[in-house]
Image (cartoon, rainbow, N blue to C red):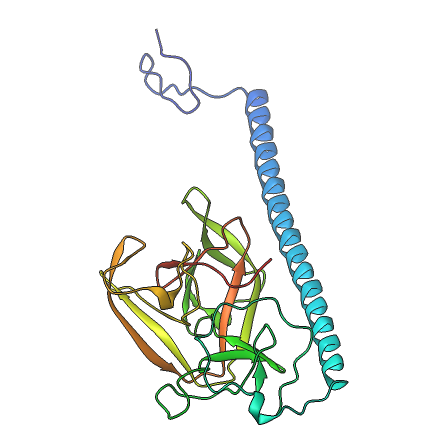
Length: 283
């Protein structure tokens, strides 16, 4: 007995005989294969379309938030113009504690020339670098208009991990993809909702951490790690993402702005030089 007939399969019982598929069945098989390929192509096109729609929605939402922020800053600037800007020198604090994390912004700033207001309205005179006589405090300040605060972002050339490799932070835009962490610790793809640059208003020094294994991170002292600890709080020997800190230093930053981004997802975490960081930008 010959084995079951398979198209183009020689029959061992009769040399030279070859099984041939029934033409009707062959045509039906070709139609089914074509239908499956067409369905797969439609599903792929739908997936791409949905992804593009989500990205456009996120970009539109970011544009609305940017417009709202611009309107709020414009209103604050108009209010500030209606207030006297003279400030007696005696009211400028000679010494003050280290810059803390920003608090709720005051309604207006009455800072005079060469001065700016911290988020709570305290008037300071930016100076620096650290080590210059009279400039032991209020260095490393960032801000816009008349308000300023302790810088809490990253240099523009910080290398952010994306699904296709590392990209300098300042080259990313809303709608781009980065690698984030899920609440259960899995690396996942996330869409950038916002990228922001903050002007530096006083000479700035950054913290530089070196970890066992060769990873390094450079950023403002107030920038958080993924676990909420600030770069400026860390000391040699502490653990960061499973590696010990082998050195902590301060390096000058000559740029005119510091940068940060906000990925979507529940954690807001992204990776710089392989180290998971938190974001300073709220949703």
